[in-house]
Length: 231
Length: 184
Image (cartoon, rainbow over all chains, first blue to last red; front, side, top):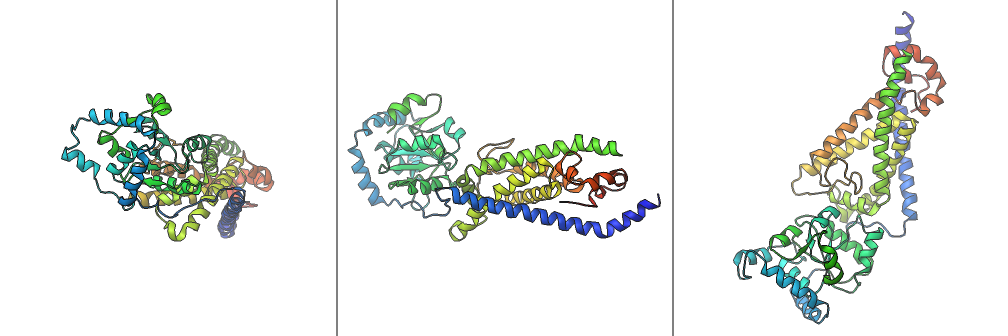
């Protein structure tokens, strides 16, 4: 019994400091190793990681009308037009003159993004839509014919397959949950790297699209729509 | 005493190490395989201005998963278990601070991306659930930091002096088994 307190005291004098230094040294070693591993990984990657790149090309109204008229010549547009008509007809809010409905369509959006009305017009004109939300949300409901592509899926096989379906010079509209969701901007930044030029962001989210009664898909009924109805 | 230490090692330290280390290795793997998504997730937290300091975000996106990975593997192996659990504890504290920052900034609606695209127990969007999950993980991290990795790890193998001292060391204080020849 006499030995224990004595040895304990002598240990206690020097041990805590030594332990602390040992642990801190270990922590620093782990962080340093992690840093070098990250550097190594960055050398192995072929595509650079990007953040904070330039915003999507601002969609001024003059440009919009120009692209819109140009788009109407596209043969694919006809198939979707019928879809949209049924979509609006079943809209419970009734006629398009409904002020409530118009307010929804013209809801303010951040600079350089599409209002719901502009996005809808592009949808009618056959623009490609990209859903940048989570896969689960996409499966539950999406803009009719939209592809699923976000940062999570971008470099995966599924993402590549989705990108194959969209020609780089085609008009593309990207949307996410609206508000301050970054996913659209991020996806646009990634698509820009791959040569996509006509990219725009829908300033409102999917919920606004759905609430306005515009046409949507869900995964249960989407298969036929994706194959034939998508622009 | 020795039996107690063995019981602790088998019943507490080993399961804690496997669970905590496993969780971190899994989280790290999910992030390492998609650095771009993790970089966007860090950007989404809006702690760093991506236009001015985007390089910081990219460095963090490359480094943090590897730190998690190394700490997780070391913890599972029981090698330098205390340093590994200290690293994990610091990471968890960092995560909790970042989560609280997002929760208390109503303008920010970020995805956690804690386990990449997988969502364990919590939804993707940042909320109190993630804070609680991190706090729960902090408990074994702190326990292992104080008590070490136990007898069933490489630390014990590498440290015969420590093993010899166990019969006396155990009864007195928690930190005693690591006093001499402590290796991390």
